[in-house]
Image (cartoon, rainbow, N blue to C red; front, side):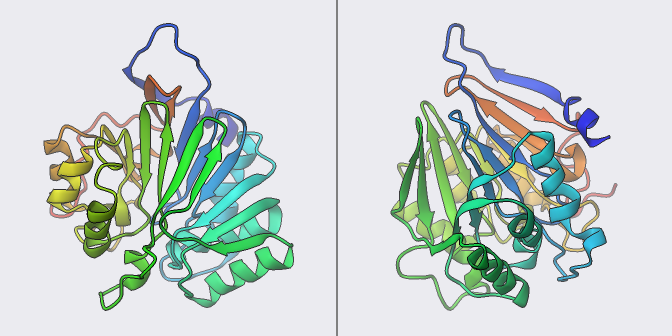
Length: 304
């Protein structure tokens, strides 16, 4: 069933470019419910996975593990047998729990994480990768990787971590800026207000007019401040959140901010798996499910 669904995406072309080179960069926001999992497929065939979802309550029963249920099936459907890089943005369960299945079943070249130790699950994930001989490396702002024609820059965590906040693990999430020709993608983990402020200070020029933004913290009002939305001014925003989740994500105010900025907002709870493709000039968005309804539907403070 999943294989058939994968090829029934609804495609919306946002811009066009005649005669361009069509080597494509693809960013897939896998629907893992209330969590994050983003697959990056580079034009040269390399593949990175950023987070792998998980139950926020930490339930690791195999039957509801998003690694087995959602992430591995997507990799199989796309014919991906190994991953060049895995990124664990921060140690929260809803980002790392599904990575156990990945660590056990998929060969991985290298693992990046933010250096903040978390739950037993997060520690088990790192230990499992290490046991398989995979390099596990804490990264910080300033690191850059060239993947063919694509540049991947680490913008956070800062070299001096953000401490003394409600959630330093979130504020110090690994944030990636991916640049391919004229297009930029910003993946923000669960960074909150303090981390966004640091990013605006340290990388103001780099994060201007983003093509695709993975919205921080599932659209929570702890993130996506008015200044951050205004300065990044994303063309497309992906929000990864679970249906009728108990946290009220995404926030009505956050969605209004993005839509007020002219951003096209797509949500996994409404649209299923999301996919953005670009040859560096044109871009298109595909959704697993029809989602023509306003992104405000189901947001915090809006009745279904």
